[in-house]
Image (cartoon, rainbow, N blue to C red; front, side, top):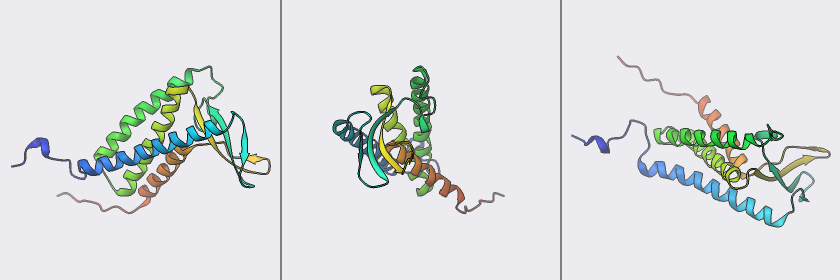
Length: 172
């Protein structure tokens, strides 16, 4: 008979598989930190450095959330978004530990890494560093960063995973 401490929940990843997904999240955090530090060292706040007709680097700060939601609030939003990121992080680690399909786990790991990357900024400097700017003529998408990209790709993977066919277990 197996010792209860060594048994896993059916479908849950092995400890090694779980840590591989955590490593992906950590890689996102590192890539986010490195790119933010490089851009912060190379550009002055508000400086725009064009590279193509549709892409520029810009050093900007966001005290709000996606698309500068609540950026004009009086500072309390920093702690609201910090709390949300902390709660989300705990839930995302729990979801990784539960296991699932590769597409699903990749999405969760990317979202976790992105959430931690932006949480780091909120805790360290009170705002998120954004620097990737896509534009066309006088129209521009809001600037974003590696963490934001990871969250977006992770969400897309979760949507794709939700659309795939599943085997239904029938219990009798």
